[in-house]
Length: 145
Image: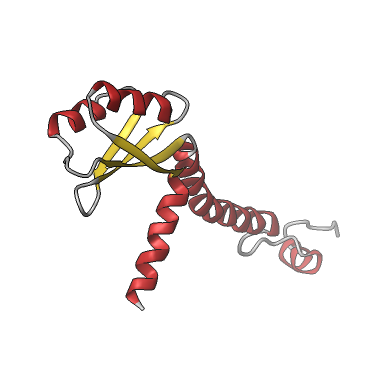
């Protein structure tokens, strides 16, 4: 009698462990690795993009003379300057915060702009934009206590 391969196939596959059930280890490891990479990317990439976007920004805080207030046309012209990202008024209308790109413009050019506008201004402080945002966040947190 000749050996019949098909007759004992199931028994042979059980003994040798050749029958495939579920997913393999390689597929499982690939899915776990992909999940970890996607999760880390969702956390790291937005922070990296925000840093790269804001890395060249500085904030300059200016105060105007005692008997003056900030003319709106001067603020509008300041916003149109190349490199100026944002201009915010202070609480008492005597101060403004100018957010600018330090690779395109600096405080000397801002001061000369105010001189051309015939405004008596004083540069109170110049800080990194991210540092100022962090300080404002900390102040709000302490005020909430």
